[in-house]
Length: 155
Image 1 (spheres, rainbow, N blue to C red):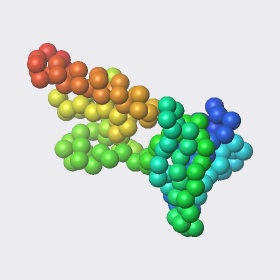
Image 2: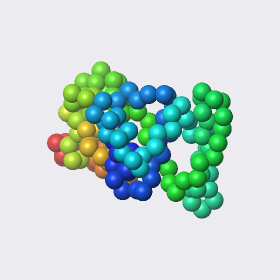
Image 3: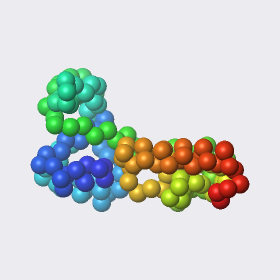
Image 4: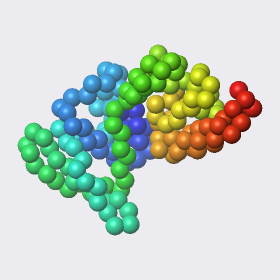
């Protein structure tokens, strides 16, 4: 939802395909989203296919209430599924998480446990985008390699 609001400030038109008939987000976010004139919510809609040859130009949507399928012309697609981090396993292993359940990492993707690194949307990094996750993954992999090769060098 936050991404849709952000895109609504950049794009002339944003369409949000939502698989239910209501949002389960904070009321202020819902009001903000529904109040933006250039954002349209497509309720009960699920993206079944993304099409295009060299660039994305349409999506195939399925409406779960009417059981109808339709094409929607688009200039781009941003996929966002849920907002809750899947950090339960890390938490059970003793990795520190913040109050929202995100794994706490430093700038080198290190956690509170020596030799354990984390990257991507499950971390406490404020930007949840593929590019950010890729960069974090590269950093974490590099640091993990360094840890394995020289475990007592970096702390």
